[in-house]
Length: 230
Image 1 (cartoon, helix red, strand yellow):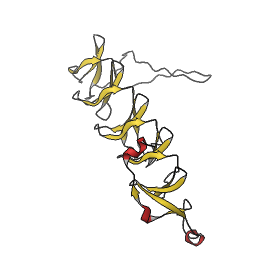
Image 2 (cartoon, rainbow, N blue to C red; image 1 turned 180 degrees about the vertical axis):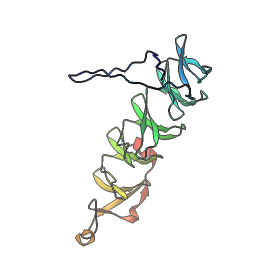
Image 3 (cartoon, rainbow, N blue to C red; image 1 turned 180 degrees about the horizontal axis):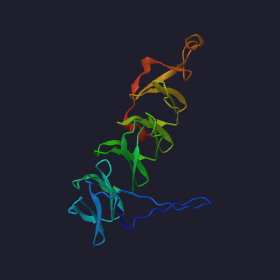
Image 4 (cartoon, rainbow, N blue to C red; image 1 turned 90 degrees about the vertical axis):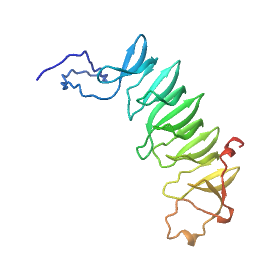
């Protein structure tokens, strides 16, 4: 077996202990992806034949993953594809690779302290206007705008952020939400319902996650722009 020393090192920090171990890796020239390349103080990408494919014009780059790469120029981040096309323009303060609950890879965007979500094809899932986005690993994750809450999915915003308090959907088709002192039920299509309490006989043999039932005649579609007027 042949061994090669290309000056690669692993540095591991431990808590109160240390160790040294030899690791052997097979050498391969079969990597067919694009490799970060540093030329004259800028980063670009070359192929496995060391041919320059994307011109060195970035201050920093990450290796390609899922056919996309994070790149930075003039303090702003963006995303490019293997052709060098900007899928996400270089205008964001922070871009973080993450996953939604179904293992769908996405990018979390941050600009002027506002957050959003975009997929790997550049399709906007959540516009970059929310203060917080949490519980991404739930089918319906929560959005916060100011002191109000809403919900999004792996496709879009389903409930604009207009509620002062919200529960979680769980196994229910509705989420309990509070707005201006009133309790509402909101479904996954973004329809809001006024509520009334279940009678005891209605819930004795049902697995209810809350005590409210929707008044179907009060059904109304929530307008996306309502979150800017509350």
